[in-house]
Length: 68
Image (cartoon, rainbow, N blue to C red; front, side, top):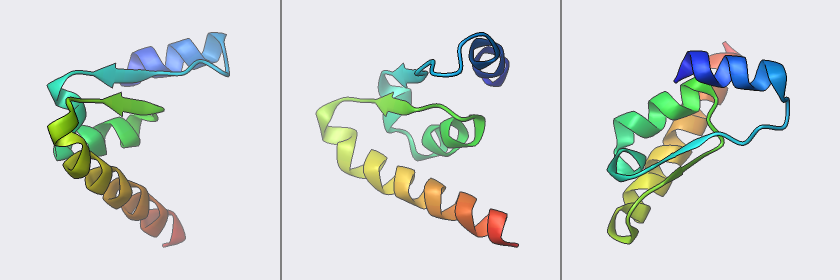
């Protein structure tokens, strides 16, 4: 996924990249997707609250690491 994201954006800077499916609702997958630079994740409705929390935690974790 990291390689695909890097190569896709090397060709087209505004390329939107994301995943869809149950991986989109898994907190560990969301953290990884944030790390590799994906724009979005999609998941089933019952997983949305967990996905939103995980996305917020990944964003905060990333900003905390940049501040060091």
